[in-house]
Length: 101
Image 1 (spheres, one colour):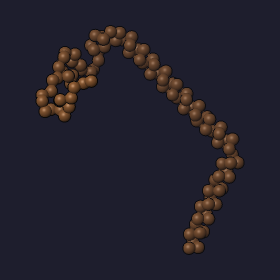
Image 2 (cartoon, helix red, strand yellow):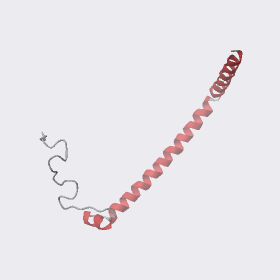
Image 3 (spheres, rainbow, N blue to C red):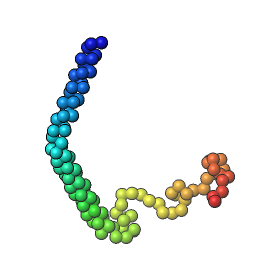
C-alpha cells in the first residue's frame, strides 16, 4: 500500500511541476500558440486562394455546359430513364402504395 502512495505522490508531484512550469511561462505558451494559429491561418488563406484561381480557370475553360461535358471525364446520360428515374415494378420498394403529399 505504501508503494501505491509513493507512486501516486510522484505522479502528483510531476503534475504540479508541469503545472507550475506552464504557469511560470504562461506568456510564452500564449505567444507560441498565437504564432501557430497565425501560420495555420496563412496556410488556409493560401489554399483557398489557389482553389479560387483553379475554379476561375476551370470556369473560363468550360464556359458552357456543352463544353464542360465535352471536356469532362465524367459520363452523364441526360436522356430520361437512365439516371435512377426508371419506373419501379410493384413489390420493388416498400413505399409503392404511398402517395406523395
